[in-house]
Image (tube, rainbow, N blue to C red; front, side, top):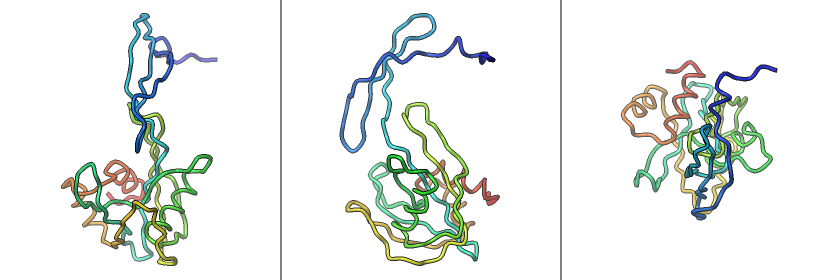
Length: 180
């Protein structure tokens, strides 16, 4: 067995304490560093999430506009949401696309995952192709999504201007789809 060169730099987790439990959880995770030093790191304990770059047969993008508390304004972003416990990200991508937009996809592929430095679980980016309207929206109680269909150039411009939500997943999905 080959030991990675950085194995001697690994921190050892020593335990978690819940520091906050609301819409999301914050954990205070203890670590022992290689030199024996003890440290505490605050971690966002969020479920896995997925964002879906949804392309119509004409090459337009299906997006949602909704209020987001973080930026305190309405933003346009990729449809997406939580990956339920035991659910595969690709299944969640299809489900979230259908629920938030009413669109069905001919194909869905998870193209990237990102594990942030201070999060306990990854986020995913998916590309859905041949998306067509097929259902009514089925929004959760706290969702208020307006479906918009826009051209890729507009999304790229808005993304570069910092006007979109799900920025990281949007870049990753556009890149994977060859649309940057």
